[in-house]
Image (tube, rainbow, N blue to C red):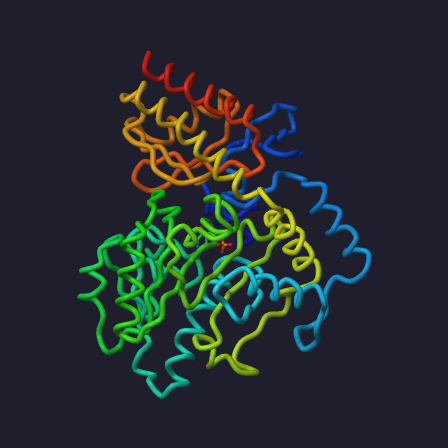
Amino acid sequence: MPESATYPAFPVLMPVYSRTDLWFERGEGVWLWDEKGDRYLDCVGGVAVTSLGHANPRIAGALCEQARKLWTVSNVFYTRAAEILAQRLVDLSFADTVFFQNSGVEAWECGVKVIRRHFSSIGKPERYRIITFQGCFHGRSMTAIAASKAEKMVKGFGPLLDGFDVVPWADIDAVRDAVTEHTAAVCIEPVLGEGGIKVASVSFLRSLRDLCDEKGILLYYDEIQCGMGRTGKLFAHEWSGVKPDIMCLAKGLGNGFPVGACLATAHAARGMTAGSHGSTFGGNPLAAVVGNEVLSIMTEPGFLDEVARKGEHFASLLDEITARFPEVFAERRGIGFMQGLRCVPPFADVITGLRRNGLLAIGAEENMVRLLPPLVITGDEIDQAAAIIEKTAAAMTG
Ligand SMILES: *Cc1c(COP(=O)(O)O)cnc(C)c1O
C-alpha cells in the first residue's frame, strides 16, 4: 500500500477555516453574487477590506492601466507610484516615513521591528518588550500570535516568541503596572476588531500617550481594521487627536488588492537603516496605484463626513433593533461602519439567519455579530440591511 493511502482524505484548501458553503463569483458595490446567481448584501466586505465596494470601477481602472505598464521591480529601485503613496500617507498622518508590505500582519510586524531597532539604536537594547491588550488581533505570524497569546491562536505552535505582555483591555492602571525597564512600546487597536468591537475612549488614549511619554516608550496603533475611513475619519485615532509614533495599515488601503503599510515618525524609525528590513513585493506599482486611487476617493471633499453621517444612521437603526429584540441582541457597540451586535443566542445562529435572509455578517469575540459594510453603502442599502437584521431577529424571537 502506498504510504499516502494511509492518510485520510484532506481538503485541497488546508482546513484552517470553517468555511461557509457559499461560492462567490462576482461583486458590485455592496452586493455579491454566488455561482447559483443568488445575491447577498455584503456586510463582511472581506472583513473590512472592500471599503469602496466590490469591483470599484475607478480602482479597477487604475489597476488595469498599471497592469499594462509595469508590475514590479525590486525595492532596490524606485517607482513613482510607491513614492507618491508614501508621501500622501505622510501628508495625511503623524508619520514621516512608510514601509510597504503585502498584508496586515507583515505591516504590523514591521512595526515591531521598528520598535526593537529604535531602542537598540539608542543603546537601550534591554527595552524590547511590548504591552498588548486582551482580545487584540495583529495577525497570524509567529510574532503576532505571541503578541495576542489567545489560546485558540497559539495552541500547538509553541515555543512562542518572547517579549509581549498582555494586559486587560483599556485599563490604564494595568498598563502602568506592566511597564518595566524592559518595556519598549504599547500596541493597541484604537477600535478593537476581532476582539469584539470595542472603542478605546479618548481619555484612555490620552492617558496612554501621557504614560508612554513619561516612561520614554513608543505608542503603536494597529489601524489595519479600524483605519482607512472605516470609522468616518481616515484614521480611527483622529477622533481622539492622540497621535502614535508608529501605525500599521492594510485591509481597506488596497480595497482587496494585497497591500500593507507601516508608518512611523523619523524618531521612532531611526534604527531602520539600509539592510535592516525588506520585502520582494512590498510597495509594487500595482499595489501602489490601487492605494493611491483609494486615497484619492477617500480624501475627496465630503467623502468621510458622509461615511460618518451614514454610519451614525446605521448605528441608530441598530440601536432601535437592539431595543426591540432584547432576546436576540444584548448590546450594540461600534463607530461608523465598524459595528457589532452582542448576541443572546450563539452568534453563529444569528449569522446563519442573516445569511438565509440575504445578508452576510461575521462574528467576533464576546458573542458578537460584526457588521462591516462597504463605506459606499447607500442610505437605501442601509435600510435594506436593517430590515434584514430586524426580520431575522423577529424570526428568532418567535
Ligand atoms: C486583519 C487584521 C490583521 C492582520 O491582517 P492580515 O492581512 O490578515 O495579515 C492585523 N490586525 C488587525 C487589527 C486586523 O484586523
